[in-house]
Image 1 (cartoon, rainbow, N blue to C red):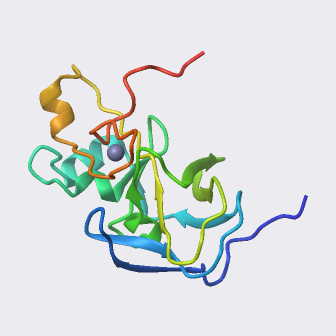
Image 2 (image 1 turned 135 degrees about the vertical axis):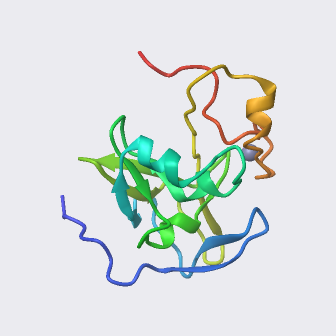
Image 3 (image 1 turned 60 degrees about the vertical axis):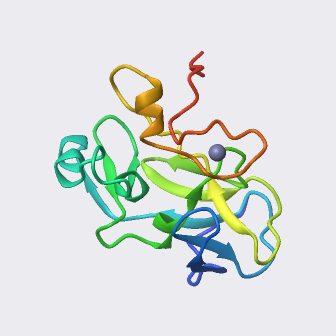
Length: 159
Ligand SMILES: [Zn+2]
């Protein structure tokens, strides 16, 4: 297997998105299984991320934070790559892979030039899961199977 270093200039561009705010779009055809971008930024503790962003008031907080594990959250708002602009979709064309603690956005299928890249945020939140909590993280991805929220599916996939 060929090792794939981070591309010097990823074949993407950031511009306004029909989903939300800005988004990331393919500049050329992207092969399936390609590492497009690394999700970078300052690595902080979950407690520090909560201190920085108030999810209850600030709707944009969750789009800048990527939870790596129980001890680490990447704050894409501090020196982060363009990966922080990738929108959520319930039926995404990319996935976020955790490779030894580094997060890479990889394509799940062939992506055509001009297509918007997205992955399933699967936000995890502690505490009770109510309709009210779900409504705080609304999804407007427009996919037929949209679950209406950026939170992870209720069904646990542990096993
Ligand atoms: Zn959706």
